Image (cartoon, rainbow, N blue to C red; front, side, top):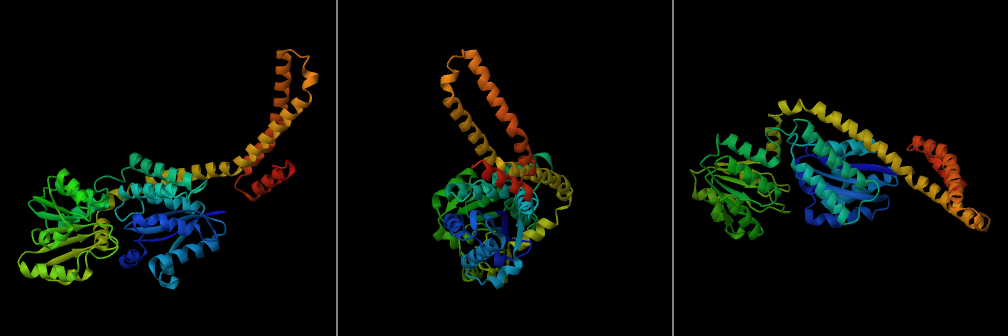
Length: 419
């Protein structure tokens, strides 16, 4: 069995490809069942965010699992494998562990050290738990990945200053306009990203915040939190006419605002520029809107460039983060090899207990003349002998765990003791 991760992210793929590969949160349960139904996949976790789509699997055969996951991505995106295969990265076993720990630590994010990805890793794991697509390999791996992400942020300065994509989006908007103080902003999307942007907007001194969302109740809840105004989604064009900035981050699977809508709006306000920051993947705003006079449209590609410009201080923390990751990879591999032989060791001791109990039962009549202290001494003697006899073989097995020799020893014990 092998641990394999196959995916693509913002470093290797353009935004339009990431959009095609993105799997919405409500589609994850079906996606997990789909992946696990494949011939060579035993366990699976799917992590799909605005910056990456990755499939983690416990695989019976590496090449078979790669083909299974590539076929899954092809069917999900509606693309032929040859259209995207050259953008895929693949890690297995220790390198797959290291990759996940790096992702959870925020060291592989568009905004270095951002905190949102840790919640996304946790969410992917919890969905997989709920769908029972994880077992003895992926369950402890993702549990430890969350611990590693917390440790990296606690023990290093990688998450100082701008710590999320949503904060970076607001900071980018503020830089474009010199300041957001006194501006009016429409926030489209009231999910985790939208909430993060709303909090950052409030701190930036925005004069007026409008919130629109597919579910009006969620928009109202967020607006109340920030003394803003909730807007029904069908009144979006009217609301757009009242603001300087549109920030959008919904989980919609298709465009929410077409180029024509923006064109009609700007025809009515030719002297009132509009800044749009769209960090949704797939995008919420028609990319063609950026060609309309007095409209500035920024997306995740622009956000990446903005984030790269402010990396120097947090990059100095990368050595410390990678040191933590190295330690945690070793710890995981040690625990993993121990887990591999635990069933054999447990079965061996259970077998010895059954034999011991059967022998005591067989000699019960001969031992009946012994008093309690004498009987206890005999039982302790037998227990001690069995323990000493098994100690060295078990220790050799544990030391060899995870190697070809360990596999041979485990097979030999299983065969010799009929475990």
